Image (cartoon, rainbow, N blue to C red; front, side):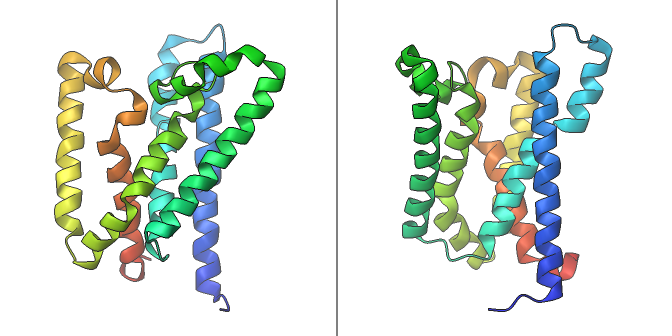
Length: 196
């Protein structure tokens, strides 16, 4: 199938969002890796680059909406992510042989592979994709987005009162957030002709 100029522009826009999100993730990690960092800048830094992960999930949802995403597709997608993670872990084991003892701790965002929390969260979201596509096909996405938005609002309010997410829900398992961003990307993709 030949690409039209409009499709190419749209793909470039998504690529641009992904690149900015990558820069954002790197900026956050570099900031927290620096021994001396002024505390006054943290809220601004987080506000500027804290949108990186939501952008990744939204871009994934946007791209997945237009694809055939049945259970076989999900299986292939999950297998690809697991292959990538396994390859990186094996390479790492060459240099740090004892690290295999805590490889599973990435689910709790700790251990040597703590940064793989994102892949675990993405796999959970991808596993929901066929069901989400059915909701969108039945034109029930507004109800879904409102429900997820309410869950995100409830988590925010709990964070304000008892630091809920930090204490009780590791980043990997904050599925209400990841599904909300992913579905927002699908929503934008479904309505791209009206929005763009």
